[in-house]
Image (cartoon, rainbow, N blue to C red; front, side, top):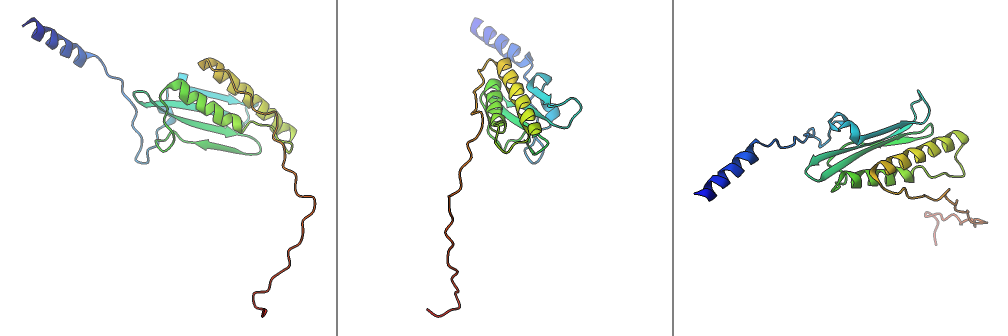
Length: 168
């Protein structure tokens, strides 16, 4: 009898504890950025009032299942990915953020062809990524200072034109 009473109390307590509500995606498997908690959104502007900047958003869609969205906007280029079930899923918030930082860091590598504005924006992005890494307690990985350009061959040998109509 005591066992039944204890089991009933356990079940009653379990049924009254709130279960976390997870957001639902749209019909295409994409979640709204508004579903993310403020502490799961990281954003910077490269220059106050400019359109240039970077964002990382992480969202828990099920217990221990996180997805990410990233966005970068440079004067020269940009890109973004939505909060979608089509992308990778991570086992923790920290893992999702670290993966996003690593991904965005690849685009922040200085190249010899970058102009001064682009270099300055990339420097600010690296600082932003370092700050995000420190917030989750990871050590930022240092990318190479610049990509070494591939040298073209010294001389290109012309190839004779072949006329498929000519008899052989």
